[in-house]
Image 1: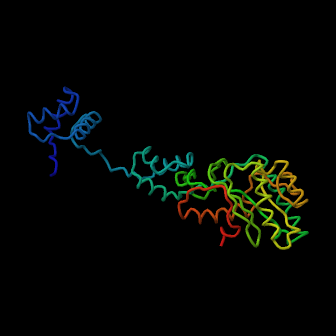
Image 2: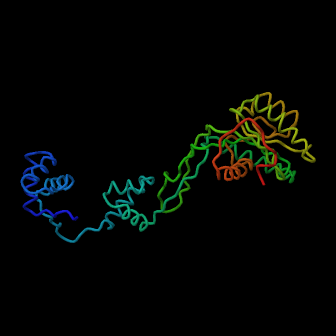
Image 3: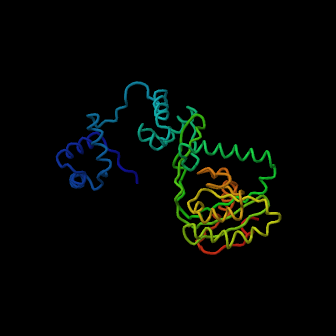
Length: 319
């Protein structure tokens, strides 16, 4: 049933008694007693009072002149100014600030040529990291000139954390611009989850190996000695192979470096190795920029419960 449309006399009656009775509920009770049993709802009463206090009238008076378009040039200029100063402003925030609908804001964004760009996630770098990375790349390229097969004789190893939550939601971090600004989000590397190790070379993979707890120098050397090396010894023509790992604290322990000096004399890559590995450089090792992304895409197709402590088949993870 459609609600009764208030006439001017009824609106005036409501305003008069609201000033006397103060609360809409009191006005509704008086309406039921003096007029009828179908009083206007509280929202209607409050809206009427707001209108009266803003305009001094209960009449629906249209503003003089031609209606102003919410997507006119003045609004566009204001939107453009805000986005240039604060490019992370969301559609909803812009709609609230300018008191226009989100569809109008979206139309203005499009007409101005602004597009949403989602930032990429990267590891936070220190000031001298770029120089160390360039130095490593130049050295490695120089070695490749002297030995073009070197790339095929490196065991690239790494640990990864498989977790069920804690991912940054990049869809809530939209950056509006007329051209892709290549925005990134720095993320910390300390996370919790199941820690997995694997080593990859151009023909095969050794792993995965699952650590029960945080990787320490003792647990790492045990993995290298008891798990990795027996499998590595089965690799054909392995006498000239090199071993690579990153600068994780457990990798730098003296017992680990001594072990590598014995098993891979002058042929290991890492912190204080024959070739120094640059910090925070996952994009330089296929163990990181390929293996873990590939495996996580497979793993996260289904929900899993973490179960640590045992190593898997050396060839089962990657088809």
